Length: 231
Image (cartoon, rainbow, N blue to C red):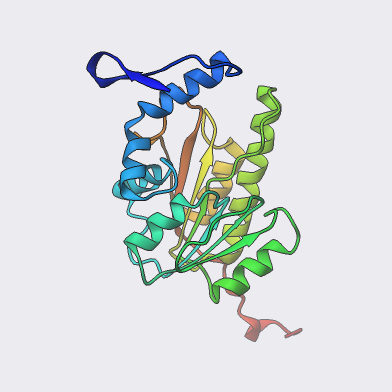
């Protein structure tokens, strides 16, 4: 299937029925140090290292007890949470089937389904400290359309986070080149004390993905009903 090249670089032999594009993808996978590391360390995907690197920079996983993982498939991010915080309760959701992960409740459901928010919070058993979103819309090949569809998921995740997070909690989401839209950033800044963009080293340079990290959820203002004549 492959043969060694200069410096240990693996080259993929041509095969009947394999396109040039698929050959390039396979060769990239074989030579990706994060892919090799994920296999060696038992992670389901190289994406696990994106969360590890984000946590090294921002410390989102410190002390978390409840975590929601939106777009959990194939499960690398939840694996990271469980390894770093084995006492944490984790609930994930995805349209795709996901193999079981010890200590993680997995819902196979579209996050945009109206039932999803209640099912997630019910399964978690309390307000989350962290909402993670690695969701991305299936691409159709039209850049503007793909961007709009993915950002709609990011916005939905942000609204959900603002509804369920405990005060002081955090929201981390994958966005595309250019980061979150200005209106979404403004909304996040209203709800969180800090909002930053980052591209972890594990994210390929040619990839358009970035991550938005919002920390210090301010919580919803409590209404004092004592002065409300209707209360």
